[in-house]
Amino acid sequence: MDLSFDVILGAWIATGLTLFILSFLYEDNPLFKLAEHLYVGVSLGYTIVKTYDTVVMTLILRPILDKGEWSLLIPVAIGMLMLTRYVPKAAWLSRYAFAFIVGIGAGLAIPRTISSFILKQIEDTVRPLLAVAPGGGITFDYSLLNPASHLNAIIILIGVVSVLFYFFFSVEHSGPGKAVARAGILFLMISFGAAFGYTVMARMSLLIGRLTDLIEFSDASYGRPTLWLFLLTVATLIVLSRRGSSHPPQQ
Amino acid sequence: MTFAERMLRIDRRIIFLVIGLCTLLPLLFPVGLPIKISSEVRGVYDYIEALPEGSVFLLSLDFDPASKPELYPQAIAILRHAFKKNLRVIGMTLWVSGTGLADQILSLTAKEAGKENGKDYVFLGWSPGGSAVILNMGQDLYNAFPADYGGKATKGLPVLAGVQNLRDVTYAVSLGAGNPGVEAWYVFGKDKYKFELGGGCTGVIAPGLYPLLRSGQINGLIGGLRGAAEYETLIGQKGKAVAGMDAQSATHLAIIVLVAICNIFYFSLRRQQRRHDGLGS
Image (cartoon, rainbow over all chains, first blue to last red; front, top):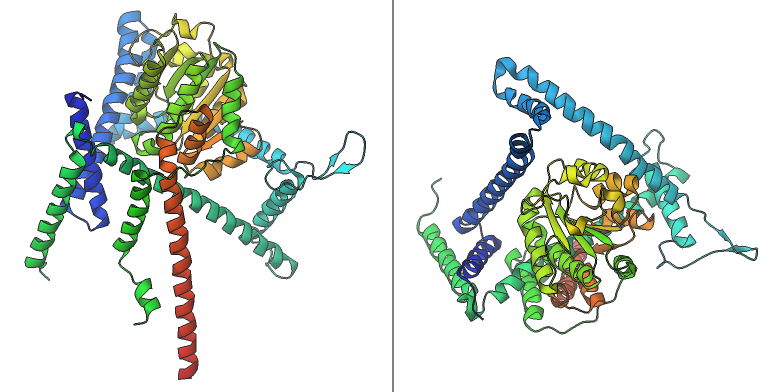
């Protein structure tokens, strides 16, 4: 398999940076610092260039110069007011730009968020706890695996009420209230556990992703960057460790 | 020092090594553990499967390279499915730092499926404004994206024929690593412009999206690498996600064992301590 020079170079850079970052698991070292600073610098540089190209060139300059859309100067002027923060005497002008952004943001977000996250979720929480069968009579679905089952609807109702009660501090949590608050804690713990489980899964997936790439880049077609850069990283760690032990830090 | 004390003070680097080996060995020597398809992943698959040829499918790749291991396989699997079904694919991103990656994913998958840019698919790129871009697209897609990622004018592109705004989109899927992502697409997109929406996300944010799934606000959810593996299994094209599932299972098992062992040592130490305190008094 013949690979182009840029693919091979990319493989070497990706492998090196991955190993440098992973070297932190042994101990903090200059290779890790190098990779960390490169990550921050490159991602910020990329964002600045992309934003400049899309916003300034594509959405502002080209429409003004090519199509004569001079009305675009109004949002540009409002945006420029932000920069007055750097001039103390004119800094008050930036408040107009902030007021504009806060006003638009709140106006757009508040009604939509209330509708989507509060009203829709309340609607889902107060589902019927029993169903009437077509031929008459009441039915009840016990399946825990079916999210829409009646049993799950009851569990969710109990969970929502008990957690809300747990965060209701105006009444002392004693007697029956204590039992409800305890149930609330239990539901919270289960949700934290589920969230942590998913987080562990996500972090392991990241490790799997990097190791998959390292295995791929250990191929001869790339020049075996995984092998060489692993040896380089280990050698550097050994040298740094010896230098550290021969020059103990001054008290 | 007792054995339990020594184990509880074990060098954390040994644990890193154990986890590393548990990840690496199954990747080198895969076992091929079975993958069960969940109803939430099937929700997205079935909807795309039922779409007629030529339907407008919007895929928003709302992530950056930091989430590549989880969301890249999801994106590849969904795009392969969409191209196989001959849907008209509109790709875009709400994350400026993910623009290059999103373009690469779409171009590679389209090339693999023999699809033509502008005719079968288009990558709109990124537009500033975060969630407000969705509202802008809901009013006029050409206002939000006057040109595609390559600088070609979007008006007149064959792939966008008959598409004026988000109301003309048959199905949208957001692959999100945070905000703006799946939630933003529901709040500012589906809820207002009434198109069907599915989601894909990293494992970290998946628990927060399950309430949207249960209430029917999204019709399916692909969660993390596991979700991607399920989707790859459904389309019959096993890729990086399926290859990673053995490692995922092995690391989970290792973590469960480590948690259990630590608890055993912790409680045995506490029991010893209490016994010691009892003898002392």
